[in-house]
Image 1 (cartoon, rainbow, N blue to C red):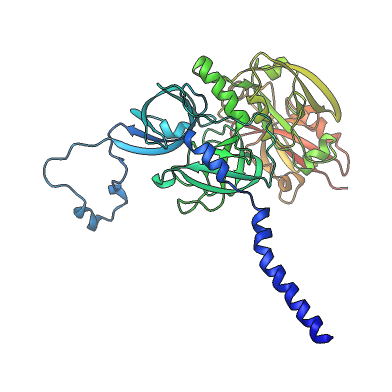
Image 2: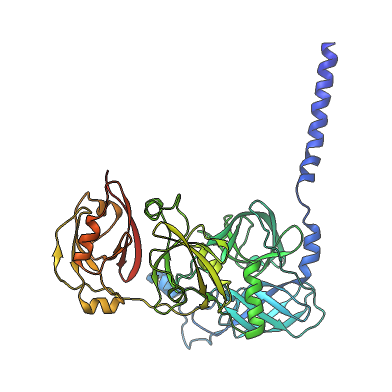
Length: 467
């Protein structure tokens, strides 16, 4: 009996072992249909740039040791410089030849050549570009082309399978797959602009994939591959795509106007930490804290004030400050929207007419010495700010921090000499007397916000007074 039982157990485990690979295969998606249907509309983009010293493949002489440079130096008349070639990916979005790719793929191009999987080639016209979203719209003279549809519902979720097709390192029509790692990633540009809520994936994306499509399992384009994070130049499982909602908005404007106009609120914002949340009466850190308003900007005209915490914009929650530009940027200029804020520990709803995106002013900070006050409960020695400095900063008043007492509340919060304080709690600080009065009203154990100007930029800092 025991022998029979042992034999049956062995047979059962062998059966499971043989069956397991088949079960695993059934649980994984089959990408073949997406590849077959989508590849004909994916294109390779070959770009010719003006001749220059930094042509691809040529070494930078400044990076070569002195004793080795002679091996690279040309003796005699310098050869003519050749134009530089680069490559990227893209995809067709209409049968009459409109193509989406990244702005950085075609930026500064002399000519753009589009090559399809069937080896047909077309000279492409750059219809328009949008550096802020890193998108470009091209068009070729052809009809009846295969094309891809942008996903319309914006229903992509973390953990979903996604697929990329492109030409990494020039290897045409390479297919890679993975999952969505995160949504709404903020990757500010060098100019500090942050208008794209990137899709983060672990799909292997490499140079040459830029501008190519990111598919969901329904074969719809959910994003445009744009960036990778790498220390080696190749993929390490951190890739970022521009979501379809942004692509649809930008493409529509480029087709109609050849340029893109974004919604603009006219605010400088910062995140809300735990101490600031307590000082504003919030149950947890959330929202975008308004640190500064552009003079006569949409927010100022709509009644927003420095110190307001924007919690909802046009019916959409704002979990962090990074989420506000994503929502505002997709709002059409001149549209009137509701803005819910926390002000003086109370919820308030305002109606704001959104403007078009303009450049923001920057201010240089120079302090002028006036009267001073001794270190108070916060541990600060402050002076009045002279009228010339106030005019440069665009301020009606304020006090400049001269000294910060060691181990004080202000020191613990990170306030430093040179900061200009314009608000303490809900009290405006126009001069030393106003600062002293506001400080004297602070209660033991109270959390309070301080609005200040540091190196020309507005900033809120939360203070926690001892019990």
